[in-house]
Length: 337
Image 1 (cartoon, rainbow, N blue to C red):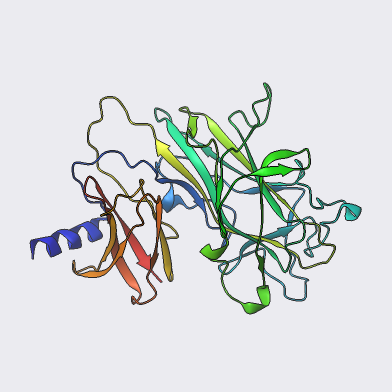
Image 2 (tube, rainbow, N blue to C red):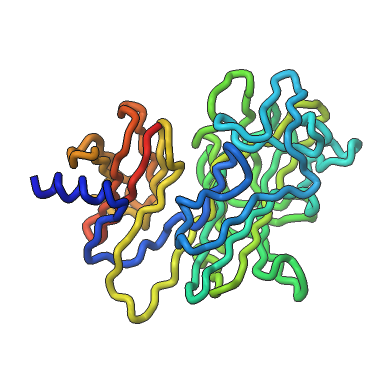
């Protein structure tokens, strides 16, 4: 009964569980769902004092909806639809596009600025990504900068193996442009009217296991390069749930803090993604109703840093999601639509 009252109070107040826990080491720093626009989600910024920012395109343009099966520029099913030309064409080199070689002047860009007095650590950039009806010359590469790609030059290519839909993949050179790139291996059929889900997810480490430190007031700029050699129209690049994951550098004087779980997307319809520290063998994600009743539980895979949670069996409403691994406990209030 006491637990039920506690959970109900937390849900009503929008607070997380407290307890003897260390700082969350892999909170979602920023999430751009790209389902309704280019701005990041204010509810998912961690820390919440970060400023908002939009995803921008260079040499790519949004869909104009004129293809045979037109995706909208932004949609809940496919995310952001873009290409060198608004009709989903223009990829070939003869049309002035990328061809099968990643070009430094064709990119998707996102930024994150550390608030005053807070040092952040960014570890990886992740996204659901596919090219509509094509795997011809389709590649992905990531480069980052901490001075906006200005002088002095500090442009740094992401390094380390990526987690892809086909497993962990070591990067390879793509022409002479980038040395650590990854093939986009799965095409996507828009006509099927199914969502661009986690089966199309790529997670690219920015700096191996070391991560990238973002000093207070400093802005990290990440550019994502995409290529295709298709000469047809309607070959949109589709990107959804773009996520920059971060570790907040702990302060020397901070021994135990309250942790907030940065889950996404929130609100959600069926699947929720729960980022967390490297999971121990007994780590679990538990979902509670507003009355404090446990309505679902999921085991986290040992060593993983993110657990997908299937909420399709639950009715619409407000829930509390808790991650616990024996040494820490954190939670988030979510809305099931």
